Length: 241
Ligand SMILES: Nc1ncnc2c1ncn2[C@@H]1O[C@H](COP(=O)(O)OP(=O)(O)OP(=O)(O)O)[C@@H](O)[C@H]1O
Image 1 (cartoon, helix red, strand yellow):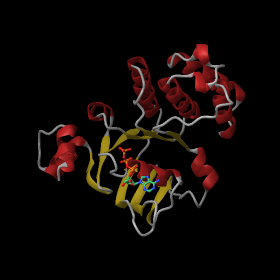
Image 2 (cartoon, rainbow, N blue to C red):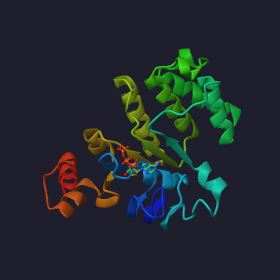
Image 3 (tube, rainbow, N blue to C red):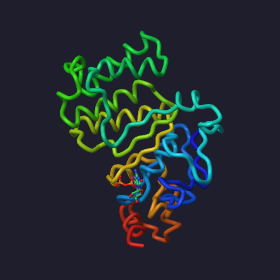
């Protein structure tokens, strides 16, 4: 599904911030993207989404780069950003309608999915409200609801748990697992390592823009020669150099 190969990039050609990063995310798999602040997680995600162009290497989805087939590439991806981004003049329901139109969903499919998601994330009562009346967690739910509405082939999630209450975190984890079971490929950046260890199948640990460890937990333990280490212990080892 998603293949990141030898990716080098960043915000200036003179100063790349990620270097030679390679990993894959297959259908029915959750891959955790882990790293300290500034390690390059969001920059990697921006390259996958096509918001930044690679200085070297490629990002392909189903074998094709974004440039080769932009409409098809974008139609397969949904993104939950770290900070909610919304239109002040649209209600929650209108945000979902806009998403449905952009992804050319049939009205009956949209209605069924939207109503289910509003129920799961306890947002039914505020569906016709404007997002500037929402709390931060409720605003984050606009992003979550819009992404799951699409049921994308590739879901990219950047720090999704920040600001969510425990019921919303649980609902999101269940949606991620359901998505995985239905064949979604999921790339999730998070600092909550206990949760990553429990829910991710494989990991990419970034340090200063480079891949330090990569693979399943047993594979990374082998790479680090720490047979009993938890994800957190492996990560702290990497972070301390
Ligand atoms: N818009 C930008 N312009 C220039 N440099 C940037 C920009 N955004 C991030 N950077 C730099 O790129 C590097 C990687 O940042 P990035 O945002 O990818 O880190 P991150 O791993 O997502 O961190 P965090 O956990 O804090 O979200 C940092 O050195 C940062 O200063």
